[in-house]
Length: 81
Image 1 (cartoon, helix red, strand yellow):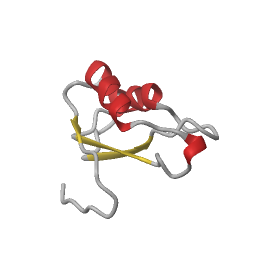
Image 2 (cartoon, rainbow, N blue to C red; image 1 turned 180 degrees about the vertical axis):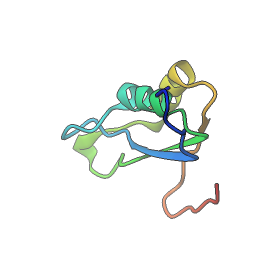
Image 3 (cartoon, rainbow, N blue to C red; image 1 turned 45 degrees about the vertical axis):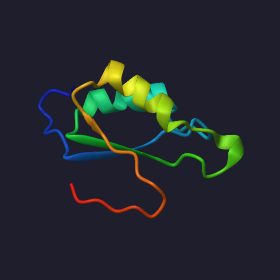
Image 4 (cartoon, helix red, strand yellow; image 1 turned 120 degrees about the horizontal axis):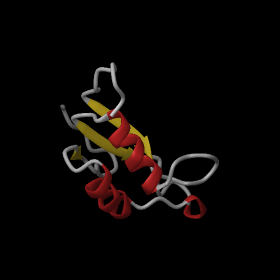
């Protein structure tokens, strides 16, 4: 967790490891660093060759940021946090 920084309510983090984006492990570490109330993975499955796996992100979040609520949205799904 970052010291002296207010944790956000939600963090949207890319889990697609192409073009400098974090993969599941890096995104989980960012989640732990910011310690939001909830994290929503994004920017995955857009292109086959870019990858990104929400299940792997979930596994990594359980290790790195177990207290953060993970929200995986379906295409077009909306939520209120």
